[in-house]
Image 1 (cartoon, helix red, strand yellow):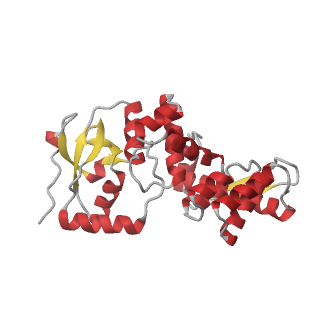
Image 2 (cartoon, helix red, strand yellow):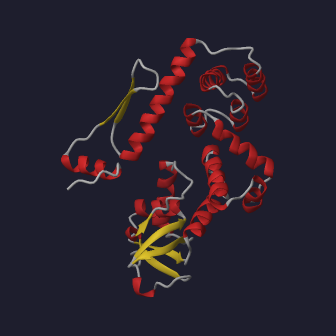
Image 3 (cartoon, one colour):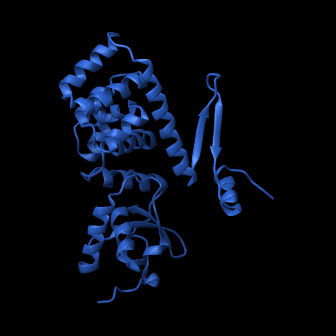
Length: 279
């Protein structure tokens, strides 16, 4: 059975419509940064068989143009499934409302990783001026849960990546967040994974480090620094959509940042992303 076409003429704010899949752009406030490709494939196959039952939520940004508010996973799977149109609720929302809808809709799901949830909580606090108790009330959690998740943002970038990859449990991660020195934190995280330390063991090790009973070895410091620079290269490269390289100099705080490009068009695109105007 052929998928029905979008009916752009019937679109009204606050109403249900069918809109073109390619007329939708992602929401910058989306807390989910990692999408399981296999899970998307399974959802896409289900959509091919049964259609998309639950509509996405969008707001109108222009003539037949929309911004996604909620339902990015379904929208992505619909693209994989080859749908031309998708059911949607078109809502008249301001920027703050869009951010809140996107954050809360995703926070109420169970498959965000702990770092994504923590970053979403932080955005709720920053954008809407909510304290931990107010955030907890909005998303239906205990205040202590919100506070413990926000503690994960104290983790060094390489350790955060371990949490995202599922190598560290919530309890282990929370204990590691109590170690302020990034090198010591990374060394303990690697030891936790290698030796299979329990939460109580990680807590004991973290307490000993905080009390000054242990110090990072030069090798641990060097490894932590290298991991930190690797993570920075990855983040900058993803932002600019190209390969970058960071090299430190002998002088503390000095170094070079190399940005690669492979064509004049890509070079012009990079200049635009860096805010450089050319004539």
